[in-house]
Length: 437
Image (cartoon, rainbow, N blue to C red; front, side, top):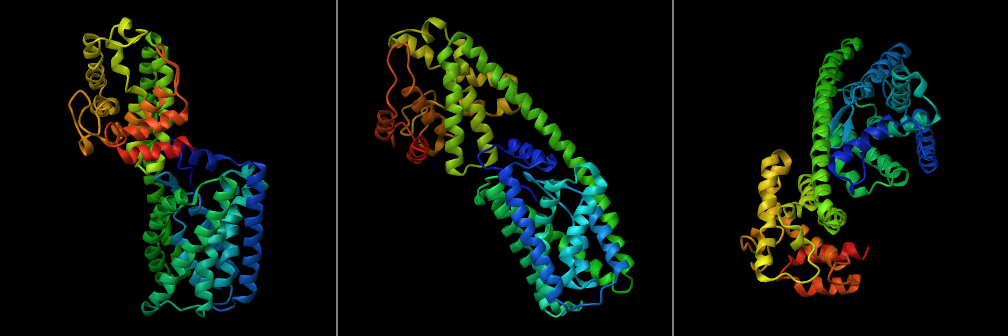
């Protein structure tokens, strides 16, 4: 399994995961972390082979069959969420009953190395070896459970042991991934736990299939090859899913490029607005992370933060760049920029059209005294509430044509003063926490 930092958007998470899967070289810190994890696995696998002696006698031809099958399925990756799952469960489970359980971790490691060498022989350097050995740690848990249970023979009444073995696999997988990803890739455990939930779901779904194959293989061990058609089907589906994700990433890039282009058009008439919008983006994404908002909400928030001022294109430059306060007529015209922004984005359509109504609401106030629709409280879209507070904080801490920038401390004090009237109090709390990090 693979994971990526939670400070990134969903599409960036996918890109980061793909980049890490494709990279064969490790940074110095990562290499040291994986070296320690790999050494720990090798020591544990050797101890398991020596001291966990229950189960059937070792058959080397059968072991070779399972290592080959494991190597084959280890090359089938299908993207789940922001990471990747591998359907090794359909081979690992029958392997635990066909071979001495204590030897299984070693054979799993051998299968992973063989699969990598067969797929890309030149990529099997020391760094890749360390990563594969660390990945094999998940097999230690079920091997220990099955081995300590006396090499439990296959029978329906032994289901508690099978559940315990699956739970042990998850525990060892999480422990190994937690160490390597926290120290090597600096991935927070909260992010890792969310990602591994999907990976464990895939493993849990495939474990009964593996158990069924194990029951079938009691009559003839070669029946483990029955898993291969299923794996090939998963491979086909994984390729289809990868193509859809590729298309989604390309579309996301196109929308983001359009948003930046529109922002540059605004900046051409108002340099403050362009730079300000990019500062607001940084603040908004930090607040979204702080509040634990969903990937879709973060995506919308980024686009709204980039485009919340796009309607100013329709406002005369004389008003936009006026060095002093606006009069009533000018202010009334300025207030139409959110409506104009919504109209422009609706004409673009797609994701940008989707966020148009949020752009319209970015100047609504928590107490209902904002514009253009007088929305109040929870009536205002959450993303608009976040952008509104971040927009104000950025404006207060930036030099304007008619006043100097406030200090961050003064801006925070102003946020607190307006909390519950202009701004959502919960958003203000998150923004202040982020601003002081």
